[in-house]
Image 1 (cartoon, rainbow, N blue to C red):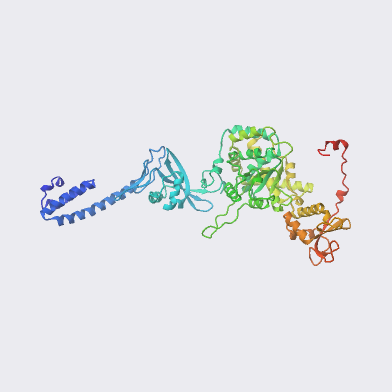
Image 2 (cartoon, rainbow, N blue to C red):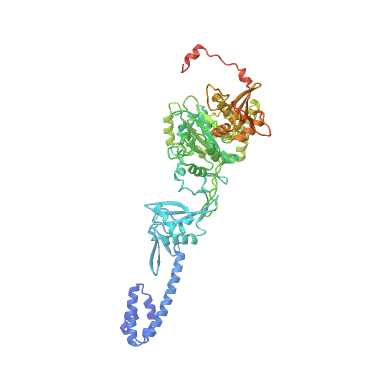
Amino acid sequence: MYIENVEQLNNTSVLDEQLFIELFDIDDEFVREQKIQSIQAKAKSLGCKSQFDALLKAKRREFKSKKREVMERDKLSNVTDFSDCGENMVQLRTGAWTADANGIRAWSERGTTVACNHPIYPARLLRNAETGKCKIELEYYTRGQWRRVIVDRKAIASTNSIIQLADHGIHANSENAKALVKYLADVEYLNEFDIKEQRSSGKLGWIDGVFLPYDSSIVFDNEDNLRSLVDSIQECGSRKKWFNLALKLREKRRMEILIYLAAALGSVLVDPVGALPFIVDLWGDTGRGKTVALMLAASIWGNPNEGGYITDAKATITAMEIRMNALNSLPMMIDDMAQIKNQDDDFSGLVYKWCAGHGKDRSNVTLGLNKQTAWQNCILTNAERSLVTETMQAGAVNRIIDVEIGNDPIFGDEGNQVANILRKNYGFAGRDFVETIRILGDEEIRVRQKKYYDAIKDRAKELGEPKEEKQIIPMSILLTADELAEEFLFKDGVRMDFDECFHLLKGFGEVSEHKRAYNYICDEIAVNSFRFNYDDERPTQVWGERNKVGKDTEVLIIGTVFTKLMRDGGFQDKAFLAWAQKNNLLGKTSGGRFKRRARISGVEDPTWCVPLLIKYDEEFENADFMQATDADMKELPFE
């Protein structure tokens, strides 16, 4: 070998090709350079150093070219090898990167580049069914176990954003960020047809005919932002214990229990039926079992414990909207509406928002519109007093099925015992009910719901008690859910009483905002009777005059006073006056006006007044009231 006998080289052998082959067969670059320098010195002494250097330069170029070819071939053969990290046998092409149990790294002429100190790779590409945007699911191995995280695709596309992966325990920092971005991009590109693309959604419930989280063909991709909610929807404990408890409670035949169960299950019927969201509100004094009843309803789908499925009533309205969007078809459950922030006694605005089935438009930083939040479900609420108030707008009243708790506590003395069982056993009935709906099909569900819709309409016609359409549809859904639950889940012969359900529905007069406004004004007139027909002996603020017109009473209310009364009651005065005139509840006016000028309390200058008529109630005058006996008087709780 030439390189072993440098001193014996001559003018011919020092330029021989075999000498250069032997030099570049030396793997250790330091040793190779030592040999080159010693041969250069010999070539100089022989007077042929320039020729030697020229040939050496050419051989270096050839060597580097062949080395690049070898590296390119290696890139095609490099695959992930995580066999030392458990049973993860995934094999993805990694190009120049070596990916094994020791992490991710690559070699070049400049040295070793480390992308990550532990195994990591892109496992799935998720394309959102609603927005079309992509997310990436990363799997990584830390602290002795495989973990996964779903992130926006842009989160791994730049060195600034990829550092956020450190929050999940991934080795990502300013030093390796660039290399980690390159590695993940290379693996995704080289395995375009091997990395599975799957449809995903940020919503639960019905998505294009499948139901999340019970169908694996669509992946829920919003876990990171809604971790507590997603984790709460699961099966836990004993299926037998839960059903035994539910059957025992259903035996009580309490409307509060049955309608809450029907509402929790019926929520997933709202979409197949094509209805709008609605509210089932349970109210009554404290200690009556409202919270335990809500826990029972929540346990159908998941964890009823605090911090689980039931919504914290102290959350902001925006947070509730985001939660509702995620629940989609699953029921929203709120314990104690009185704790909701930024609300006064009238929940009309909130009811309208929830029951519209979508949130408001919101712009983004690019001056475009974000995807609008939307849902089709049932909302279960409770409080110590009814959600429906006298001043609530008619459209809001229409969307609420209002249930007052009976005289006795719902669960008697067993409330704590029931709650303890529910805390440990839950999440079974929801999956069973969804499977029932799948088997029956949407058309059968609609047929059953139409049956109850027609039955309510027929009963209303028979009794002469017309009911509001927006009340009939929700109740028909609840009755359908109750029927399906009894027939396929409980099989106990216990169902909600149809007549009792019918009488929970509001009639036209109860819901009509103008009718309630009229009753409100009449009440205010009665309470403030001394403010009408001025009396010098008892001076007070005057609101108007009251005069008899045949059997009826015409009350002239000063215009500004009337406007204030309507505003205080939450009613719209012009719309009400148009309704009152149409229904002959206004006295004489002229010129198409709703008011007329009158002199009040002898004041010389006339003022504009609303001439409201209070009709003579012949039924009230002829009513046969029961006379209280002495024994009845003794039982009264006051003297």
